[in-house]
Length: 179
Image 1 (cartoon, helix red, strand yellow):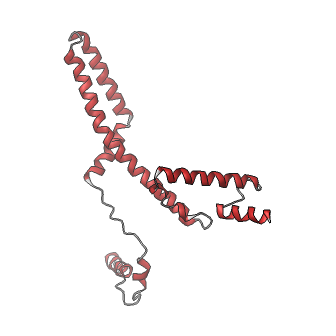
Image 2 (spheres, one colour):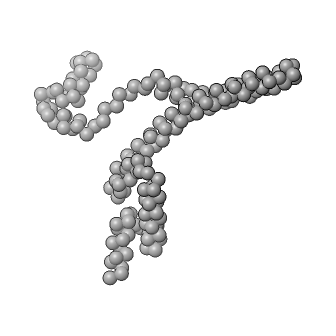
Image 3 (tube, rainbow, N blue to C red):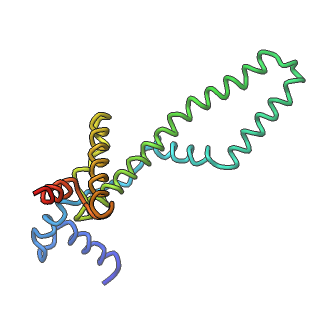
Protein backbone atom coordinates (compact mmCIF):
# COMPACT_ATOMS: atom_id res chain seq x y z
CA UNK A 1 0.00 0.00 0.00
CA UNK A 2 1.47 3.39 -0.98
CA UNK A 3 1.86 6.26 1.47
CA UNK A 4 -0.88 8.45 -0.08
CA UNK A 5 -3.36 5.56 0.04
CA UNK A 6 -2.43 4.85 3.66
CA UNK A 7 -2.86 8.54 4.55
CA UNK A 8 -6.31 8.69 2.92
CA UNK A 9 -7.42 5.64 4.90
CA UNK A 10 -6.12 7.20 8.12
CA UNK A 11 -7.98 10.40 7.34
CA UNK A 12 -11.23 8.46 6.74
CA UNK A 13 -10.70 6.54 9.97
CA UNK A 14 -10.15 9.75 11.94
CA UNK A 15 -13.17 11.46 10.46
CA UNK A 16 -15.48 8.59 11.37
CA UNK A 17 -16.22 7.53 7.78
CA UNK A 18 -14.79 4.07 8.19
CA UNK A 19 -17.37 1.33 8.28
CA UNK A 20 -15.24 -0.65 10.72
CA UNK A 21 -15.22 2.12 13.34
CA UNK A 22 -18.83 3.21 12.86
CA UNK A 23 -19.91 6.04 15.14
CA UNK A 24 -17.16 5.46 17.70
CA UNK A 25 -14.78 8.03 16.16
CA UNK A 26 -17.54 10.60 15.94
CA UNK A 27 -18.09 10.49 19.69
CA UNK A 28 -14.36 10.37 20.41
CA UNK A 29 -13.81 13.54 18.36
CA UNK A 30 -16.69 15.42 19.94
CA UNK A 31 -14.56 16.84 22.79
CA UNK A 32 -11.59 17.76 20.62
CA UNK A 33 -10.93 21.29 19.50
CA UNK A 34 -9.93 21.72 15.88
CA UNK A 35 -7.37 24.49 15.47
CA UNK A 36 -6.98 26.14 12.09
CA UNK A 37 -3.28 26.94 12.44
CA UNK A 38 -3.78 30.02 10.25
CA UNK A 39 -2.54 33.41 11.37
CA UNK A 40 -3.88 36.73 10.16
CA UNK A 41 -1.61 39.05 8.24
CA UNK A 42 -1.58 41.44 11.20
CA UNK A 43 -0.69 38.62 13.59
CA UNK A 44 2.23 37.53 11.43
CA UNK A 45 3.37 41.13 10.99
CA UNK A 46 3.10 41.83 14.74
CA UNK A 47 5.14 38.73 15.55
CA UNK A 48 7.89 39.58 13.08
CA UNK A 49 7.95 43.26 14.07
CA UNK A 50 8.12 42.64 17.82
CA UNK A 51 10.88 40.06 17.37
CA UNK A 52 12.80 42.45 15.12
CA UNK A 53 12.27 45.39 17.48
CA UNK A 54 13.77 43.42 20.33
CA UNK A 55 16.89 42.37 18.44
CA UNK A 56 20.37 43.75 19.11
CA UNK A 57 20.60 44.83 15.45
CA UNK A 58 17.53 47.03 15.73
CA UNK A 59 18.83 48.58 18.94
CA UNK A 60 22.21 49.20 17.31
CA UNK A 61 20.47 50.79 14.32
CA UNK A 62 18.46 53.08 16.62
CA UNK A 63 21.62 54.14 18.45
CA UNK A 64 23.32 54.82 15.10
CA UNK A 65 20.37 56.98 13.97
CA UNK A 66 20.48 59.00 17.19
CA UNK A 67 24.25 59.47 16.86
CA UNK A 68 23.91 60.63 13.24
CA UNK A 69 21.10 62.97 14.27
CA UNK A 70 23.21 64.36 17.14
CA UNK A 71 26.22 64.81 14.85
CA UNK A 72 24.10 66.79 12.39
CA UNK A 73 23.01 69.21 15.13
CA UNK A 74 26.01 71.56 14.92
CA UNK A 75 25.91 71.49 11.11
CA UNK A 76 22.30 72.74 11.02
CA UNK A 77 22.69 75.05 13.99
CA UNK A 78 20.44 72.96 16.26
CA UNK A 79 17.45 74.27 14.38
CA UNK A 80 13.81 73.63 15.21
CA UNK A 81 13.49 71.41 12.14
CA UNK A 82 16.43 69.33 13.39
CA UNK A 83 14.67 68.82 16.74
CA UNK A 84 11.30 68.24 15.07
CA UNK A 85 12.72 65.42 12.92
CA UNK A 86 13.79 63.29 15.91
CA UNK A 87 10.71 64.17 18.00
CA UNK A 88 8.26 63.31 15.23
CA UNK A 89 10.10 60.13 14.25
CA UNK A 90 10.30 58.76 17.78
CA UNK A 91 6.67 59.67 18.51
CA UNK A 92 5.36 57.88 15.42
CA UNK A 93 7.51 54.79 16.01
CA UNK A 94 6.52 54.65 19.69
CA UNK A 95 2.83 55.08 18.86
CA UNK A 96 2.86 52.22 16.36
CA UNK A 97 5.01 49.93 18.50
CA UNK A 98 2.59 50.22 21.44
CA UNK A 99 -0.07 48.40 19.43
CA UNK A 100 2.29 45.74 18.12
CA UNK A 101 3.77 45.04 21.54
CA UNK A 102 0.31 44.94 23.13
CA UNK A 103 -0.83 42.41 20.53
CA UNK A 104 2.19 40.25 21.27
CA UNK A 105 1.65 40.49 25.03
CA UNK A 106 -2.05 39.62 24.69
CA UNK A 107 -1.17 36.53 22.68
CA UNK A 108 1.55 35.45 25.13
CA UNK A 109 -0.76 36.04 28.09
CA UNK A 110 -3.53 33.97 26.52
CA UNK A 111 -1.08 31.14 25.79
CA UNK A 112 0.19 31.17 29.38
CA UNK A 113 -3.37 31.10 30.72
CA UNK A 114 -4.18 28.15 28.50
CA UNK A 115 -1.09 26.28 29.65
CA UNK A 116 -1.97 26.93 33.29
CA UNK A 117 -5.56 25.84 32.62
CA UNK A 118 -4.22 22.59 31.16
CA UNK A 119 -2.16 21.99 34.30
CA UNK A 120 -5.14 22.71 36.54
CA UNK A 121 -7.43 20.48 34.51
CA UNK A 122 -4.92 17.62 34.47
CA UNK A 123 -4.33 17.51 38.24
CA UNK A 124 -7.01 15.65 40.19
CA UNK A 125 -6.13 17.52 43.38
CA UNK A 126 -6.35 20.98 41.80
CA UNK A 127 -9.55 22.97 41.92
CA UNK A 128 -11.07 23.49 38.48
CA UNK A 129 -12.82 26.58 39.80
CA UNK A 130 -9.73 28.58 38.87
CA UNK A 131 -9.60 27.61 35.20
CA UNK A 132 -11.36 30.81 34.05
CA UNK A 133 -10.11 33.11 36.81
CA UNK A 134 -8.71 35.66 34.34
CA UNK A 135 -12.28 36.58 33.41
CA UNK A 136 -13.09 37.83 36.91
CA UNK A 137 -13.21 41.51 37.79
CA UNK A 138 -10.71 43.11 40.16
CA UNK A 139 -12.93 42.88 43.25
CA UNK A 140 -13.50 39.15 42.68
CA UNK A 141 -9.76 38.63 42.21
CA UNK A 142 -9.10 40.42 45.53
CA UNK A 143 -11.68 38.21 47.28
CA UNK A 144 -10.12 35.13 45.73
CA UNK A 145 -6.64 36.25 46.81
CA UNK A 146 -7.94 36.70 50.37
CA UNK A 147 -9.50 33.24 50.13
CA UNK A 148 -6.15 31.69 49.26
CA UNK A 149 -4.36 33.76 51.87
CA UNK A 150 -6.74 32.18 54.39
CA UNK A 151 -5.93 28.75 52.93
CA UNK A 152 -2.22 29.40 53.43
CA UNK A 153 -2.82 30.48 57.03
CA UNK A 154 -4.92 27.36 57.75
CA UNK A 155 -2.31 25.15 56.12
CA UNK A 156 0.44 26.78 58.14
CA UNK A 157 -1.50 26.09 61.35
CA UNK A 158 -1.70 22.47 60.28
CA UNK A 159 1.60 20.74 59.65
CA UNK A 160 2.98 23.01 56.97
CA UNK A 161 1.88 24.70 53.82
CA UNK A 162 2.00 21.51 51.70
CA UNK A 163 -0.50 19.57 53.80
CA UNK A 164 -3.83 21.10 52.73
CA UNK A 165 -5.15 21.05 49.17
CA UNK A 166 -8.26 23.20 49.31
CA UNK A 167 -10.15 25.54 51.59
CA UNK A 168 -12.93 22.99 51.82
CA UNK A 169 -10.46 20.41 53.15
CA UNK A 170 -8.87 22.92 55.50
CA UNK A 171 -12.25 24.04 56.89
CA UNK A 172 -13.37 20.42 57.35
CA UNK A 173 -10.11 19.55 59.05
CA UNK A 174 -10.36 22.48 61.45
CA UNK A 175 -14.04 21.77 62.12
CA UNK A 176 -13.14 18.19 63.11
CA UNK A 177 -10.47 19.52 65.46
CA UNK A 178 -12.91 21.88 67.16
CA UNK A 179 -15.38 19.07 67.99
